[in-house]
Image (tube, rainbow, N blue to C red; front, side, top):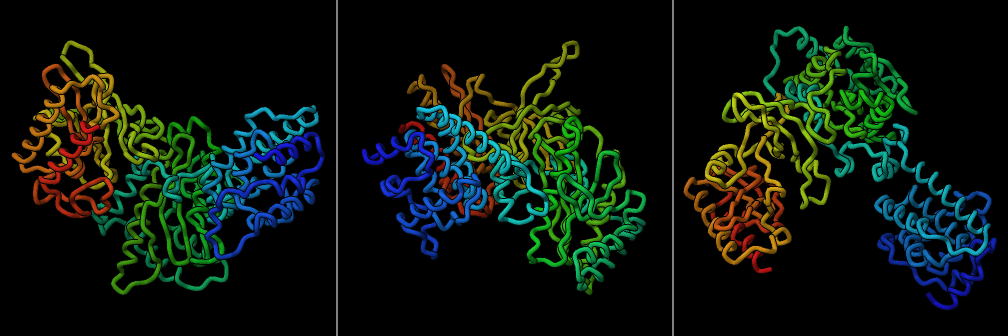
Length: 618
């Protein structure tokens, strides 16, 4: 900082003015702005300085408002730059103005900078203000309280009608009141069919064999679907008119389940459509828009906020025991989307359970049949009210809740399973839930006269639709994979695989350089290479391929005269000439194959050799 600037700032101590011309003219150019790439020309540094000065002087009466558009005045990153560079020397009055402008930018600026902004301002508040007077310190305390109040405001949930607009929800989704509704993709929880059997049942009904054509409930669902495909494509003057007609048609399908309510109060707003049949609250919440592509926002985001507003007010114990399951419905003109919502770890998880169904007639009745299956599945799930209040088999946060036991691979007996916590993958930049790996405990019998021994296990939920079960079992029998204990399945949900947990406490480590023990000897390195050669020979001899022998998928344990080696993640494994890479293959990871291509034995040999070379070259 220049001496002129420093002396000017010192002269401002205790001053009532917000900004001094000499200070503004002496400040260096701010950091480059992300908005510089926009075609609209922005103000020069001098123009920005004068505009800030004028805005500050004109807004002393109203601390958090200004007649100026700060997107045109100075960039978000410029304010961050001023606070970070001068956070120990700028006076409280000048920082007070910067804080005000930055707070406005948080409300309507680039949401990617929200967390960075909060961090920068909190950093300044954490440092003691260099002020010589009591009034200056009092001003600092008042400013700190105002900032905390503003922070609480931008972190609280929006009304559902506001949350339907991307310019609004994008801020909430970056704050503490986010909803795991897959927008943006980072805001995502566990799949709903892992969290509650009702949603697994719904998926099983729409994805499994078609219902019996003689089932009276399915016949009624077909009649309702046919009428919806005749009426919903018509023009309606208002949203209320469309939804009233929708309710009139579907009411007979849910007769005896509950009654539909319009404009039902949820939190600070009202839901367009609610079906309530339990003492606790609704079992279905719906939002609708008269026509798609209008200016009224996204009905899916609005119904996510409506569910969240209701679920937040439910008793905390019930949130933990049952998860507050609820189906959600989006009507967007002649289109309809079926979804669900549940509370997990004090966060609402909302997810579509279907593709959009088009409510338009089709000569061969294909659209009517698709819609009928969805309506039939929904009516079956809503028919038993007790399912919505029943405690779940597992209540551990951020873990599957529908599996209470698994079937032993050898004994074929049911073994109780208790989830402990998600298993955090250290190589995954995002939350561990994306890996679908979990730590759990089981009680294994060790003898007829001895009590069961409790041990920790690893539970894997395959991300794709397949898992190399046979290759895994065969490799485990040869000592090249963790012992597979058993599996568990629930209709409408993926099969889970319970296996031996290779823990650090037992001296297991991944085959990566930063986990490699420092005491490893050249002899042990040789044993490790020999064990790798034995692995590739085993795969070749059994005509198997793995596809992903990176260091993060291989675990080792050193012995005096030998090395134990276990391979994880058998998702892509299979027979040579049949097993394929996934279509979404990350080519930056160094795979020799191509997306969707066959996995070859030479690919496994190359990947393992490269892993070992990278390990020992360092």
